[in-house]
Image (cartoon, rainbow, N blue to C red; front, side, top):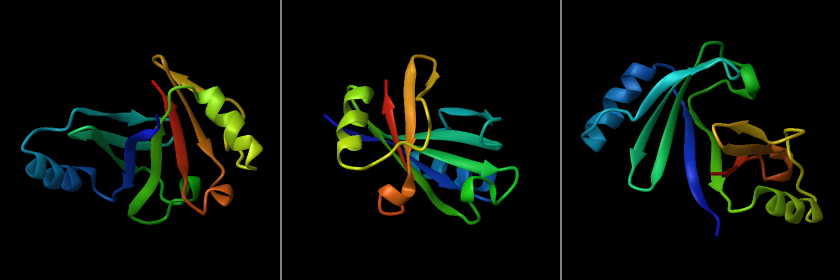
Length: 125
């Protein structure tokens, strides 16, 4: 079964965005940190079964990002390799050469030109 894992949103001011989402949910962000690979400060806000990842880039223009708004959609999959093989048969290619592994999680981005211009991430937890 595939479901939305998280939505990543670019913001110019992480603290300002957190004020909004923390007021909306009535609780503090679940995790804050730095992502040196992306060059961003990040925070995760849980909303039921969905996670909103807020990202403030240190340098705008990185990874093709130049404005506030949706950065990518991540889908949770049961078997990442199986899904990648199915997508390859449909002509949809991964952006990353190999899936990234972080704390027992495997993740890979798909080429936006193959996904109707939407940066899409697949996550296996």
